[in-house]
Structure formats: structure tokens, C-alpha cells
Length: 85
Image 1 (tube, rainbow, N blue to C red):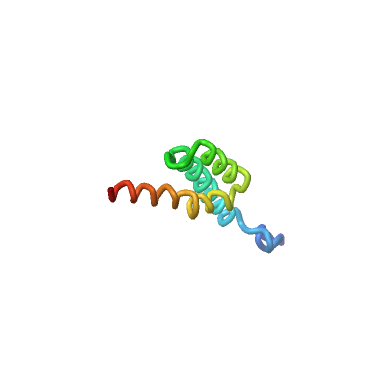
Image 2: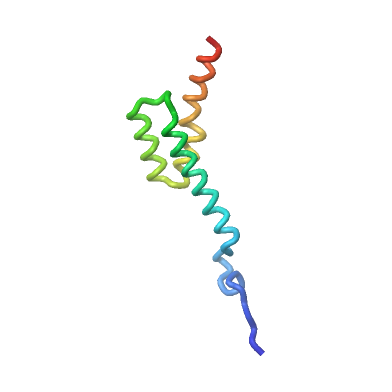
């Protein structure tokens, strides 16, 4: 009689591909969305755009989060100010 163990039972600290795969796909989507958003942004100068793109490329997990929390805020505020005029 043979006993079959799953990967999570053999190595309990390694997550299954289901969870890991979900986070990898989610990270890839957010990463690509951040780069597209940076490329479409018209409020930053070309230098600012390059800096944000380098931040996202250098920090693949934290960079897109920073862009969506800090980088887009400037452009969103500018957009609202232009609409109110």
C-alpha cells in the first residue's frame, strides 16, 4: 500500500500553485496596468513619466502600488481642477 502526499503536506511552507498562481497573475495585471497608466498620463513631464516607469520596473510589487496611490493622485486632482474651471 502506497501513501500519496500532496505538495502542501510534504512542504507546508510552500503554498499551492492555486494561491501562488492567483497572486502571480494579479501582480502581472497590476504591473501592466500601472505601466499603461503611466504611459497614458499627460500631467507629468516626460522626465516624471520615465522616473515613474523606472520605479515600477525596479520595484515590481511595490512600484505599481505606489503609482496608483501617489502618482495618479496628482493627475486626478489636476483633472478635477480643469473640469471645475
